[in-house]
Image (cartoon, rainbow, N blue to C red; front, side):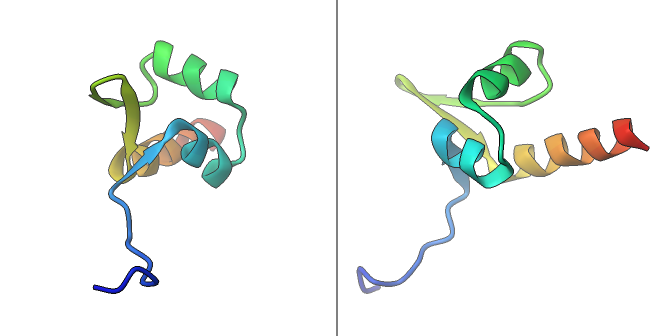
Length: 65
């Protein structure tokens, strides 16, 4: 695989998640604290699996309906 190929990541960092969904870091941590957004820990790093992002967005849509 060449370095220039984009790799589809299976998990996002907090800054990547925030940029992807358009929310701030404080709001992301609030969602985590309230248990609405599942995280993975790898050492000190906090990651959010793509399926957790999908679940979180679905939950938001359901709450809006």
